[in-house]
Length: 162
Ligand code: FEO
Image 1 (cartoon, rainbow, N blue to C red):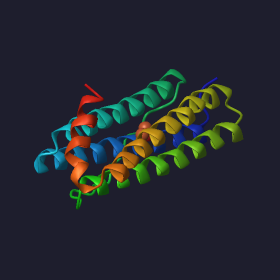
Image 2: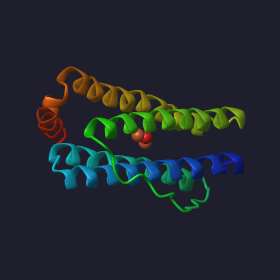
Image 3: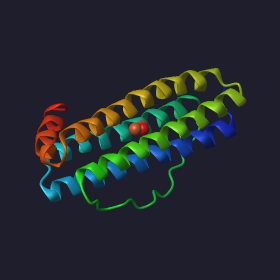
């Protein structure tokens, strides 16, 4: 069964969200590099890559279902932050936004009774729990370490994702 048009539109909107997240995290990685936070830069660069993989995975699903991938402009992203903590606060807020969008995607799958799409979305509902947990863990490190501990966190985060 070819994918329903409403479902296709919802997937294309989510692909745009994932590519936006990839751009945002890449910009964060470059900001970290500029400021000399190399551990955070490496970690955020990999996060950017992961978001692009999410977009590619969704695009493949759409094509596999006889749908059409329609890429559109990606809005420009914020380019500077006051501190590493502010970057991760924004990243957490963005993940919570993406979680809400994934739930809307899953709602469309239910509405149009597309079981394959619903199964596909379930994987990303779970993925978002992990992504939010990862960001929350990092924010807790900042909370416990205080300003003087940022350099140590930069090292730990860089080592955690080689
Ligand atoms: Fe693909 Fe972090 O949302």
